[in-house]
Structure formats: structure tokens, C-alpha cells
Length: 184
Image (cartoon, rainbow, N blue to C red):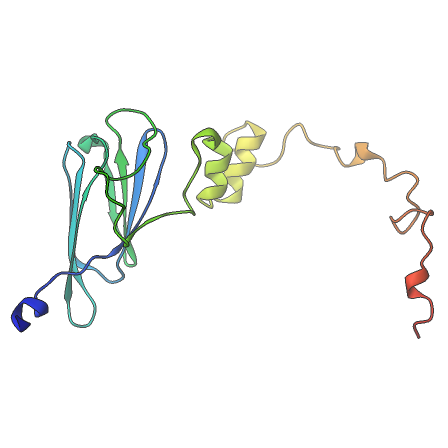
């Protein structure tokens, strides 16, 4: 009995998000050693690694809702996590991550940093959600790839011509400064 407890595996925390054509899985396991990731076309995702000072075994098997295109999947094993981009075999939004009617295990959570709702899936949102460098946003907004600046917006602030009728303090002349009286 004690021997079984010593050799049982643990489950790492997994965060997920999706797009119409991809599923993002992030396995949060700092300092993972001997990490092995496998994805099969039927949508079975398996992971194993050791971590911690005691070299504890961490294992994971997820039966994804739909099939994936294994040849297009990308896996990056980093120091703090394992990031996987799984290309869906059929380009469509999934109603959940896993097959079956059971609730997702407690260690599988939504990655709100990468999450985009189906009706919000736009290029601009992806720039903000993935914290791409500012210059990517600028060149996207400018429409000129590789050049910096906000073309077509030059002089926009000049054209606003001040804030007419608001006076020097920007609050207008209609309000008395009565809350400041008597302080001293």
C-alpha cells in the first residue's frame, strides 16, 4: 500500500483556450524534466514529466472533444510551462474541451489571458491578448507592414482645435469653485 502511494503520479495544472482553428494548452509545471508530449489524430493528448525536489512523476491524459491535425501541432517545452498549439482537424468552435458528459477535472482550467469569445475573434484582440509588442499594433493600425507610426492620423489632435467654451481650467465657466473655499 505505501509503495503504491510513493509511485502514484500527480496531475499538473492545465490551462486552455481556443480559436476557431486551434486549441491552446498550457501545462504549468516549473522545472519539468524528461517532458514527453504526445498528440494523436483522434484527439488524445498525453503528457508526462518529473518535477520538484523529489522528482515527482506528473502525468496527464486528455481526450479532446474533436480530432486534431497532428502534423500542424506545435509544442514548446519551456522552463515554467509546456505550451501547445493544437491545430483542429475541422475548423469550428468547440462547446467544451473534453469528450464525455463529465465535468472537467479540477486541474483543467480556462486560460482567461488567451480566451476570446467566438464573436470577438479578431486580429486586434489577438494583439492585446497575447501582449504582442506595441510596434505590431502600430504597424497593423497603420496598414504599412515594417514601418512605424500612425499614418493618416497626423495632425488629428491639431484638428480638434482645443475645447471651446471650457475656459482655461477645462472645467468651464459654469461652475464655481466653492468646494475649495475656506480651506487654508
